[in-house]
Length: 467
Image (cartoon, rainbow, N blue to C red; front, side, top):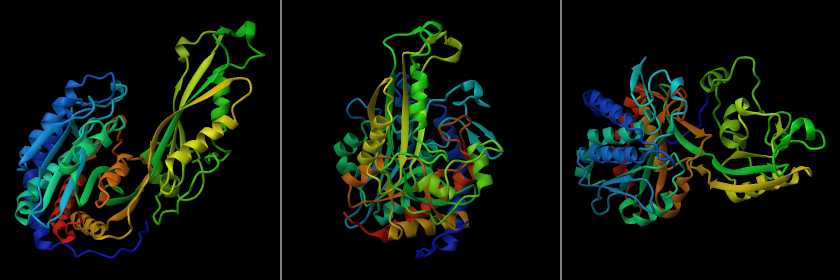
């Protein structure tokens, strides 16, 4: 593993770090217990799910934040969206304000029979806490709560403003996010925004996420017939829609697995790379299978476009009959690196599909989400402070890392609060399986996350007020 050189911020005082770590040891059992209580609430905000648990989750988060001593705590929603929590203590004159972001909603569980233990009944095994939301992102919520339990009184004495914003619909695309932060602009305005919703480099090694890919997606529909017909009587002159859709989707990549859509941007290769064997294990790639594309793994994951077919509407195998399928649909998701305009990427993707559409079917494209990528400055007082704080908490050097996933709302934060700097920090690790079966949190690293954030908050006074 190689890292780029950074201008170091002053290292936290070793004696103060030791004292804070000792205090954290006392607080940690209660923090983990509170996290387990949050995991027990099935706060899935997707359409079609019961909304009561999402409300209950917001109420539980609000109560936890009241317990940190923040004087203003309220639950808000806009435009029929899911409830979010805002908790704050305004800054003294001339002092900076730090906003702490996380989300309390979670992904659906998938097939619960595939989980080792019930997804909403937290379970500890081998130093990890298992359960839906244990990592993504109720660990982020509890990292903020625990950091404030550690240094909240000290921040109040310093006059540093603190705002905690815990969203309730991030997993389903943050549909009311922009409207929410515009409605509550005054309460949420900050000089520094810490987003605790990313991953660390590996267990025992902290990371500061300095780049995120954006995302665009669309739904492709291929119609070959007006209605289903018998495959024996009519098969031959007509290719069924599923076959034609498959042929069209196959044009999206070349023979090496590289994205074949013209006009997309590639960013610079990262200065760090991953061990292929470790990454294969983390990703669950079976032994003997080749990887797609070329170049460093980190480039393929962070700074180059990646295109996936993430869903297909077609008859299930067990329900299939001897008929030609008249219409088939697929959802295509394209991840884009920093420097790529989402609208231009969408245009390029749609143009490719239209250019490769077969003459033997009617092809339509429904444009979907457009999320911007994110790139943090390589050097700033805030990023150097964060690296120094995390290095002190972990006892090992912080790595600047990218993330192949997307957090599109960061662009909204930067547009609504243009003078703020955003830091994206990690609560997960490569084994966390966020969104997947047996999602989990490494409890040892969780403690370090809490300590690192407390040290970062303690040093925020040096940043000054920018607003």
